[in-house]
Amino acid sequence: MATVSFLSLLRLYLFFFPTLTTPAVLFQGFNWASSSKEGGWYNWLITKVPDLASAGITHVWLPPPSHSLAQHPQGYIPGRLYDLDASRYGNKEQLKTLIKALNDKGIKCIADIVINHRGPVENGRSCNFEGGTADGRLDWGPSFICKGDANCSDATGNPDTGVDFPLAPDVDHLNPTVQKDLSEWMNWLKTEIGFDGWRFDMATGYSPSITKIYMANTSPGFAVGEYWRDFTYSPDGKTPNTDEHRNQLVQWVQGAGGVVTAFDITTKGVLHAVFQAGLWSKLKDSNGNPSGMIGVLPQNAVTFIDNHDTESQKIWPFPSGKVMRGYVYILTHPGNPSIFYDHFFDWGLKDELIYFSTLRRNKGISATSKVKIMAADSGLYVAMIDEKIIVKIGPNGGLGNLIPADYKLAHSGEDYAFYDHLFSWGLKEELIYFSTLRRNKGISATSKVKILAADSGRYVAMIDEKIIVKIGPSGGGVENLIPPNFQLAHDGLDYAVWEKNGNGYLLVCDL
Ligand SMILES: *[C@@H]1O[C@H](CO)[C@@H](O)[C@H](O)[C@H]1NC(C)=O
Figure (tube, rainbow, N blue to C red):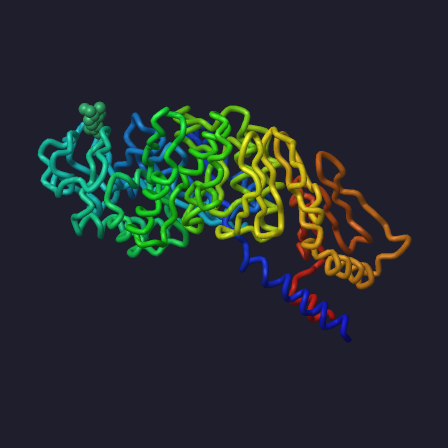
């Protein structure tokens, strides 16, 4: 009886727990060339959905969905906001199909909201706009544009509350009709198209109090702002002023209501300083915490390595050859990490990225995990996260006695390593789980093994046609090997078990 009740609890735990604790791992699902992909980007990305699911991605940031000026096919000067059929990424139906395929795997979609400025009617007056519907929604004229904007000489709106965008008219967000029209459009993107949240493009272009209004009017499940400020540097021009930089991000988040997150550009700057200029001590601030935004307001920070601007257009690419080291840092540290399409699919880093995102999930590393920095100088960074793992980054192998005796090396790559806490594995419960599974399924000394895969980082086998077990760091394509009458019953670091007709509720009843 004791075993039965223990198992019942364990099954219920497995059934309910995963959805409650999954920390966010974001994915930027495009690059600067995506709008010219033959056959359409939405049609391409939908073929990658299984890979994204196996990597534990929770949110995919998709490109701006609307019609955009002809010379700006990437979508960043949108005109007819409601017209999703004229997008160079694909049409509205293809977008909805993609979003549904992602949602079916439990992945939410983030729309790129470009509202600082707007593309006027082409070959028409530079201050007239069309919404893209028959009923005149978002059909605007010069009174909706900030007075003094160089792109619209007869603009009569309020002065701009932020940075001017020089390539198109800047929208007057103090106009209540603008706020109403854009909020309606964003809510339409949620209800009609299936988006769950926002990435606010050029959030420096208007006051944070405006972002706060759109947040309140649209209640996104998740939102992140591109609040891009340049760094100032020490007098010798070498050391970025990270305190000043991250304070601007924090102030923006607070001004925008405190719920929205911001891209942690400070952390990217810190990692550039380390890998480009060798400033290893920059990894620790004067309080002993990480010196990026994750050191002060981690729950509102979205960490990233590169994006469609910084890498695709070589505006500020991550130091060459150091990208994976950067990911080891952001995927083991607090904040909400994000992965860039190119790095995952084109750079040969997929297996390592899956390894670290799985580690993050399995160890429960979250946006607010605790970092204890044990070394940050001369080519060596060592940090303990949540007293569960230790991560080491850097070419300097002189660890001395830094790694406590109860931690053991679990995984390593070029200039990085991860040490696991021996007593945080929960081995006893896992051993009981597997020995109980063996007994309940009648796996015996002569059970039949059918090997489904044994290659490149994965082993998958069916035992007695009752369970399937997977071992190995690679998630690549495993889903295609699992017959539909098998369901995921249990997983751990680099292993998983599927049971025939298994789901939590039925198993509890079986017992
Ligand atoms: C805005 O003005 C700039 C500078 O004159 C020009 O290059 C750009 O084409 C204009 N854009 C629009 C949409 O009128």
